[in-house]
Length: 196
Ligand SMILES: [Zn+2]
Image (cartoon, rainbow, N blue to C red):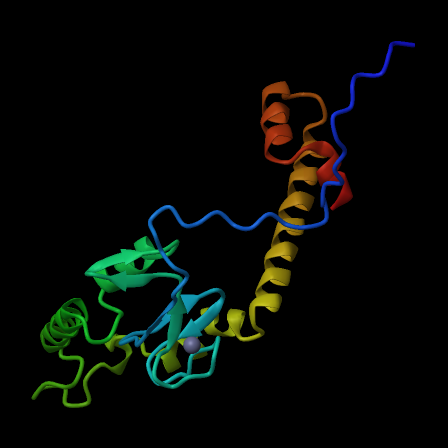
C-alpha cells in the first residue's frame, strides 16, 4: 500500500445544491415582455391571441409573455429572436408590421370579394382570415384543447405508434435487407422499439 498523499485541508463539498445559472450572455436581466397580439398564435401548446387573457398570469392587458426585453431599441433575452419573428410576421398589435398585414389582408379580401360584391353580396366567409375562435374550433384547436399535458401525451402516443410501425416493418423484412435494417436501427434502436 502506497503512502497517503500529504493532506493540506479538508472540505465538504455541497453536492446537493444546483449551481446558480450563468448570467445571460447578452445582458438580459430576466425581464419578460407582455405582448398584445393582433392575430392568434400557438404558444407552448396553447392558442393565444386577441381578446384572450394571458395564459400565464391572467392579465387582460397582454395576451402572451415572452422571455425577452426591449432595451434601448434592442431585444435581449433567450427569446429575442422569437419576438422579432412574431413582429415580422405581423401578429404583434401596435407594430407597423401588424398594420401592414391588416392592410394586405384587406386588399386580398377586396380582390377575393370575401366581404361581398354586387354580384355575390353574401361574400365568401370561408375565405376570411382565421380568427382565434376559428382556430379554437379547428382540428388544431381541438388537439390543444386539453392543455399542454394532453398534447404531450398525444405526441407520446404518436411516437409509440411510430415505433410499432417500425417494428412491424423490421419483422417483415427479416434479415433480407441489411442496409434498410441498418437505417431502421439508427432511426429507432431495437431495444427502444421492443419496449414500446
Ligand atoms: Zn401575463
